[in-house]
Length: 108
Length: 392
Picture (cartoon, each protein chain N blue to C red):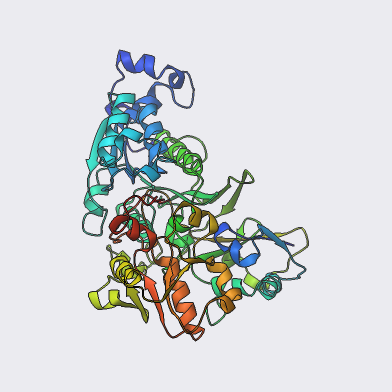
């Protein structure tokens, strides 16, 4: 199946926009992905191995959180898994620290 | 939206309106009544930057009656690559004044309300309450959660757009039937884990694409026509020009819009997003890393002290401006530790002091004893030491 890697996480997946993995469940697909790209693990999962709250996973167009079997849901080679983290950009400042930053410069 | 105002109380169209909006009036989905709805509508744009620029311009052109703008920033040269409401002559001007001038020039009948402030928990409900729709064009997580919660508490739709590099997201949150931003993302990422656009960059056209999607959604909500993005997240990939969409569900356990909400008033969003105000002491030592000011670094270099400046930016950034540091881009540092002398004092430097802080922490964890971070990065150097240095 194909796993789509979002822009902010591509540096941790050898700059690839998508990765092909062989898997029978979502959990297997994620394990395969993080085994070949270990740096992704910290960005996707907490220390306890739980998916981080600001990262959403979609099997095709369905939120994995709302699938009855969740990450144990079986997948086929034609399915896609999309990782969708929250992004905040839009206006004109932020130097990483969001607002409250002393020097507000044009940024995103 | 469209059902809240009966057509009897809608403002009449003037002769000027009839000619100006003639291409709308012949659309069955707009027509006279729709145009009167637009004239009656009050939309708040939070931010007049990348997303707010096209959003406000198109709403003004479409005949929205009242447009509120929230911003406290001034126009900077680096904004002009994407913030098309501002012009070169506006550099240094308040964004609100610059935006108002363009909007009123485009449509003199438009009423612009300027909110020259940073949206906060203290003022958000008061500002938002006078509008029918809120369009979120902000650039940081605390304000995104603030806008979301305020919209849910007031029952206002939140037309959402967000961008990073070549990728954008758009949706409509906080209508009665649909999910809110917290249903999608219950918690923000911890500071530092997700790069900002200042670090990651953004394609100038992308906020145009996403901001126009937001404007389209706002207008559809006002007209009550078409299928809105409520319950759908639209993902825009400008590099490959792909639009994908995902189903969003209302989270029954959502702390704001769920059945038993725990957030019933606005909270401290900086704290919620893990942003702690810096005290003086923390400034000197951040996460265990000593911070050095540009002035101090300059005087130490001038005094001939042996300091290794490690520049962890990307090569193209180094080309724009540098202070002669050794260039190892942040992602290469783990593989190139052998090139970094453990016995010398190392001052890690980047554009603003963020990336360098993370790399300084990494070096410290890797056993380097004398690592400091250049506070404010090369931007502070340009401000305080070398005004001729190119800022970006």
